[in-house]
Image (tube, rainbow, N blue to C red; front, side):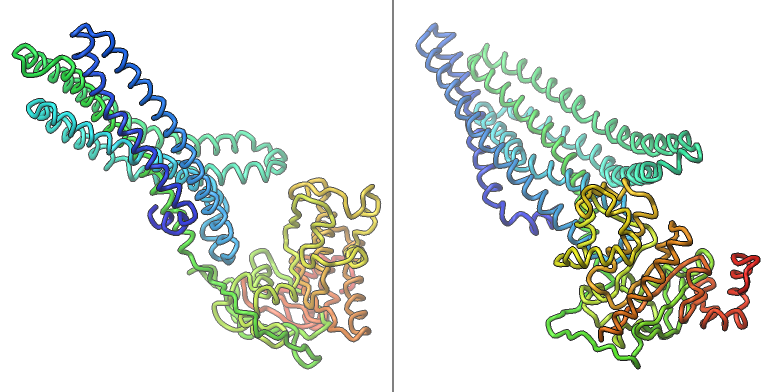
Length: 586
């Protein structure tokens, strides 16, 4: 918690100072109030002096009004401080998450990161707001009331010295048992977020398989687990108030008995006894509020630790400075893409790729095929440096991808992911992701290659047609064609299609591959570096015409060559062809 405040509280330090100062004035009037009431009783009520009662009443009203005014100012300072710091933390956390590589994102998980950005930051905001408003008030009010009471009568002050440690012991026992629960509660919220995300994003699949009852059961189990932890914390915390109020009320009874005896012998006045009771009540109430504040701060501390865990995580894929960077010139004798004995593992598990070596020259097409889990997506993820290889070198235009600035590398390498992803906006705003300055002619050219021109032109607003979140207002094939078009905008040097045409019919798929080949020929004819293409697919028909086909088997390179060569040399490829091309001539 302190670490977060040191980092983000700078611009809001004046609110941290002004807020508590306003509270100090309020506390000062709260401490004066019992003395004014004592004077009203002793000099006004008992003495029968109406003027003294009136003056004391006016004084109480003035102190109340001034106290409320300063309280409102403090509330304003607390709101500005807590919301400002929360916004800063949330913005910085989101920016840091976007700097993390895929390896770190996989480790945390999307639901956990969402909970940290939302719920955990909210817990810190609440703690900051209460800190500005209450952290000064209640401790000072407790200490000030105790001192004022001791000044009235030291003997009765001994009641404070006995009751306060008792409350402290109860407080310490309860808090020591509550603290471990708060971290577990946030983890339980992560689990709820995960179940919600899976159930809602996959609602069509859930309904198709009639798994609504199963998903409701998962959600109920997740919420019940969180509720049981919250109930345990609540049960422990609920001990605080009854126990402290019991001690406080017993202490008040003792004060009234001893104070009454002192009044009888003339040691104290009735007003002083009332003032003493008020100070006693203020002191013990302050301790109760401090206990509640500690609960809030403890919970915020657990959330802050989770936030700091993200901030402390450094991305495994580090960017390089691009000030002196010069894009390498890709000639015909330099591979546009090369893998040199590349091995990659997710964490400490078995290698997802093992000793892969291949080279692809400008204008060529690489087809990647293999069974599920063979490492196809992992292979292409290394090209745009979503991950770094555990061993070996991945090169683009003859340069190790680790020496490329990420922005430059990802401008040259356009990745079309397995799952078509569009964001809310328009077709135009989605297509401009790679090149915000692209003209309409360039957008239509990309749509033409991606076989998306027909349905975009058929829409009343064309490029300005609305896109709902996730592209839900388009079919699966339309979403895939739009994401392919988005990747083509900005003239990339390498186009990576990670099984991104799986929703297209065979005719459209064939037309798409033909258009991409023609685009490469046009680049060569215009003197540009021809487009190099990597196609990942489960279909033999999608890769059979590629210049080089890479066959993967459990991360290992099972075969490398043309369609005809692999039919003769690679048994796995031959099996795939036999299963998919029945009745056709290979």
